[in-house]
Amino acid sequence: MTLSHCIVLALILCAIGVYGLLSRRNLIGLLLSVEVMLNGANLNFAAFAHFRATDPVAGAIFPVFVMAVSACEMAVALAIVIALYRGRRQLDVRSLEELRG
Image (tube, rainbow, N blue to C red; front, side, top):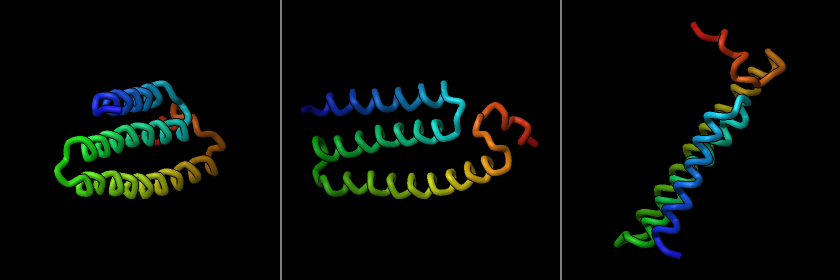
């Protein structure tokens, strides 16, 4: 496995995440698509740390921070989703347009 293989896999993951963001109407699906995109970025960080960095530990720390921030983001987003579901009994993004303003 080479660096180019890892980059292609990360590109595929990011493309799947973008497709999920553009095609989904469910909030949970949107959150999962964002997570797939972040995993693609983590794969790039880890691959470049393994193949190109002089100090691989320094490059491997970035995915840990991304995962920590992602976990906090998911906790807040899931709390918002639960609050919206309790109030509306649905998680369709298009039905939430009236929350603007």
